[in-house]
Length: 147
Image (cartoon, rainbow, N blue to C red; front, side, top):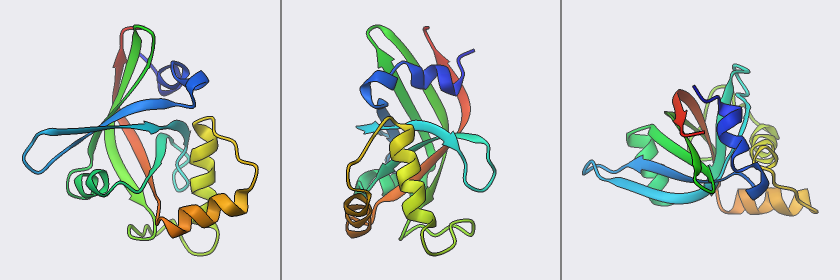
């Protein structure tokens, strides 16, 4: 069995680049490219997979159907994390999100968990706020691959 850390390790050197798949209302798959990384859930401390998005289709799918699959790869080695997505953002309030700097800190934590760095965190926070970015936290239910 592959672990969350093992899955992410495949894409660690590529800033956690992964393909995410969500389920449309017509039961077809919508896929896109994201950067994701493992981190502790802010409320439970359990390991989750996080990414940041503002994609209308992805968010609409996840609000209605939180099932999600995220696939990392390096060469011919791959690992998929299946799970349930929890959204946290300006349009997706969570009781544990609170007010103030909790969301900006979470968005930063997700960005750095995926291997990102930034020279101007104030500019990063401003962009996240202006674009109404949302944190997606995936609680794994199944992790598998060929490594």
